[in-house]
Length: 386
Image (cartoon, rainbow, N blue to C red; front, top):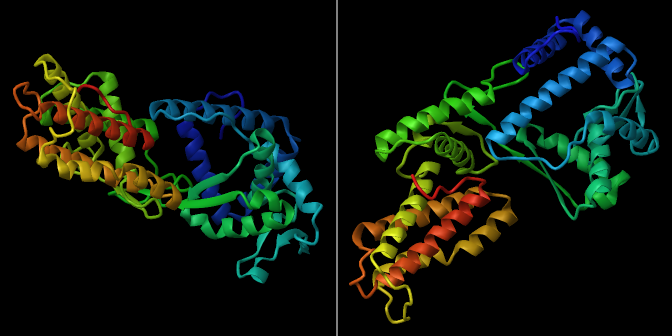
């Protein structure tokens, strides 16, 4: 076991979590001890447990920060369970009509509303995840006075959140009205499902580094170019994010490394390369002296297919937002890139002698900007050069 004097890594924490989860299922003696430790954590009554808990939490937070930086994500504020627990307990105890006592616990009777019952205070009087989640809504609102809150978790707990939001409608109706839960699918590898509870996981940093290394090789192979460290990272992260978001978030995703890193078809690198290619074409057009002061009549009919796709972007974004389906944006920018690449395959753009060249350049610029906007909405970098 680990003591508070030991130096330990995030991977050791992960193994300890998996070991504890298994023991809690299979070993009655361990289950009793885990309950004791859990109570000590909540009450802050055991110095050694406190020290281990605080150190483990910090190691975990520090590791997550490195991952957030790698994937260009940041959080403005953290809410900890230790903050939510006391208020969650108070909330449950102050609403006995909502959470009646049952075998020493406090339970929300979900069956009365076509749902299932959930324990909000266990028989030891400790607040469960449910009670903490109730409290979290109030803590968030106190912190930021939110207009609307979207809680995103794995779809495996969709039913749990239906119960939670119903309970919230009784104790904090004003918050329940502006809170929504979106249950997303899980990312699976070709080897099967990953689970932190069983220890069947690939460390995020190792996974990203593996994709980054593969992206470097793919650049040499597909576009005959070397990728520097930053570009390789942007391509790798773009590949992972697009592969995750190209399908409905409500369904599970199977990550395929070869498909994700392809420079052809529906992939992050394909979109990034199209963006960089357009930038290169526009630079060449500028060097060739193409004048972009275009007149309306100088519009090539071959551009209509690209235009017909381009103008749909605002309505696609609105639809994606309303449906909570980012894959609509991913699908659209893939269609736009494909449409433009077909146009570019048959049309020369950087040609100052072509009367249509100014309009073609403006169209290319509009496509480039729209691709960049769409990639930004998916939190994917749009490189200027590749």
